[in-house]
Length: 109
Image (cartoon, rainbow, N blue to C red; front, side, top):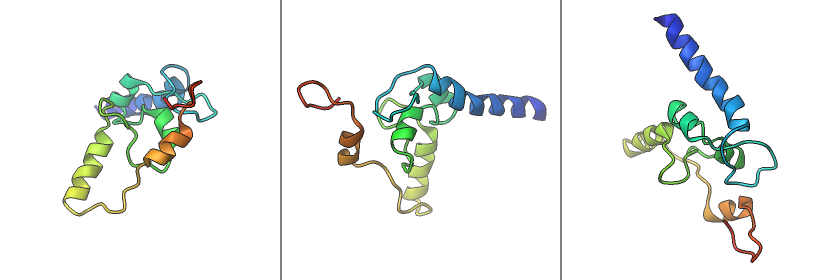
């Protein structure tokens, strides 16, 4: 059983760095091929929101939208609630605007 677990988690980790640079969508202008992929996001506890990670590498939260499942973020929020996590970094609205794709009428996506 140990071997199955090791192979399973290794493949999920590898998916983040392979699948999430090929398939998915780009929400942020990062200048690279990183993509958000929902099924990798679920399997990898939020790491599949890879374009979000590339845009805001310092952020404790990778699932930036309400519908982007991010189990790691939920754990961090719990730890903050019980006082075990402090000074948690997430992107501000200004930082998000700076990384957004600009639409032709100068509004942001």
